[in-house]
Length: 619
Picture 1 (cartoon, rainbow, N blue to C red):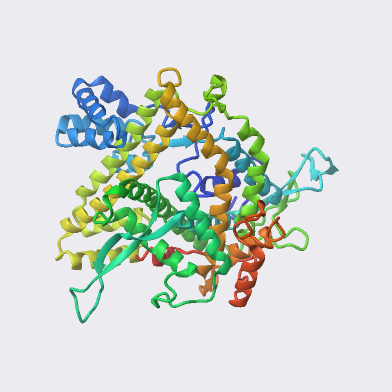
Picture 2: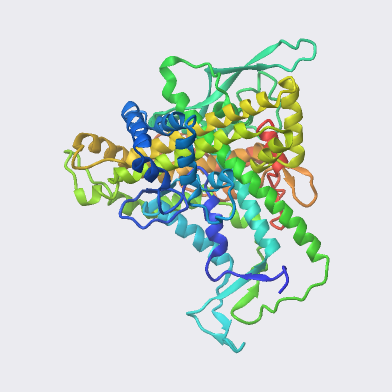
């Protein structure tokens, strides 16, 4: 059987993968199904915790760990760094820790510790028992099942005879090239969602700045002060900023503007583009000037920015791999190969259904209307999880579903995750040559050409010293790691409590969890609506023609979904409780006035390429 064989979708392999990258802002660390009673559970990347186990078994390591845990009982995200600093200069102890990391490798014949740490450094936050997340997963699966399943009820038996059985379905089939296109489109869409998820809740603040070279040929010493876009720690303040950003789109001009012009600087389009261009600075720049009393806001922003950057690096690598697959299948399609008979076994070729073309953008784009519908459908189940009444009385059976009571399990997972990521960054110091550096950059999602460009630029800025370049890269990734480890620790700590031993602390956490559960559906819908609309400010590349186009695919689907909803005639009217924040009719008129058209005909890929992503990130 040749490589142009078709794929039977009877066990949902396609949408299982797509689900893992959908709605980047909702759960970048999710993906492992752990059957638990709690709506949230935590586990390390493997069934065991070898690092934690060796630390507990070795007296010296345990002594270091106990000291770190004691000294950082409040800021627990610092425990992995503390432990690694204690052992990295002790060859014997460091070897034991590295060997523990290597013990989970599936291919023992190889001894590439870096490879192990790169692939086994994920902690999993499972939210599959959250009513909203569960309905969201079911919805996306059912949508894709509808696309890949003929609903006529007609199929074929094992002998190829046509039968009409309403209890059976005919599965559609697609070749590998179409599958790659769908997955590629979803990855690209997820990148825009990740960028927009940050900017939807961020505001430009003059008190948070960085100073950079102005790259002025006439004045090499000239510096520019750049304001950053900051996300607040307080949930209510974040919600206010999200509403403000969304409201601004009602009067937005979607025509191209010169953002260097001061009169345009505060326009939604210029604000959005400046925001996404500075996300990497918020994550990686260690010289941010900020008010001392706003430290929590800076840490929240750094965590969110670094999660986005980490996700985009992985997405870029995936898009690059899929681009290579596309080239392979394009070449293969030019050669004659035996066709696959799709008439038996309940399979049909994946084609347009009826008069509607179903292209990759159409299949993978989700609208805020979809999310709000899911929020409405899950409201009853979410309300049933309220475990504290107005008088502070608790329903213990329900409360147990909201928390992670197994503190040791959380400690194991967080230590495992933190130590692996920290050790991986430490390995960067072993890079001694430009070829080794190039290999590393490619593994992080840069193309070979881009890696060469980065190395040339960095060597020029560091007097040709590769050790200085490597140290800067290490500092950059350490900043990212610290922010991600803190974010994940905070996520776990939000749900990690002993209901019996910590009643007061538990009540406060439970109330916060209940509030987050109640607001999650509308929050995600608002963030997605903002992202789908502002994506029209991005420039993307047509994968077939390589022509640069305005990214209009998502905004037109979003507006079509939002039109006709209650209250769209006057969203600013406070007397209309059902009024949405964004007026779809008004935005549509503004879009049409700007001359924007839906450039995606549903048959090709008009989406972010690796080059587009690098431009957005200022690389």
